Length: 171
Image 1 (cartoon, rainbow, N blue to C red):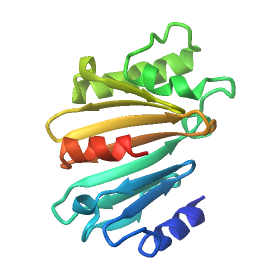
Image 2: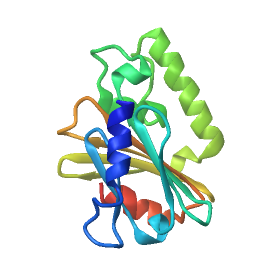
Image 3: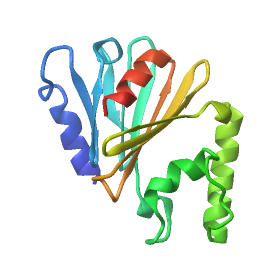
């Protein structure tokens, strides 16, 4: 998988539709990065299933593909529920002990960073998204009906919330 990401990153410079378009690609997701975020930025792989761009102003946008295998979840776990459990939108009572503990811990980390009462859920045909921001950071999960084996986790630091929302909405 690391080789695939390096190939994708190598194609980024020549793979855009116009000089102002740049893209991050993870399994099942193509993320358009606006010119104000990507211009002069550095694209890099940050693990086996994640890619990122760091803007000259220091803003970072990272996209990570989340899978059952990556998270050590049972094969029968409904991956579309991952963001609901992680962000506290769905109770973990019905999960197996290991999964319950994992999601309760994740939620605690997110609660320390974000006000989870402000999670935005948006639905469009074939896609569900969940996002939340604080003053300097944003987090989103994107679930696509036609991508059963992965969901996308998108996060940013020091990128305007408007830009982050536009990026997440275009996926």
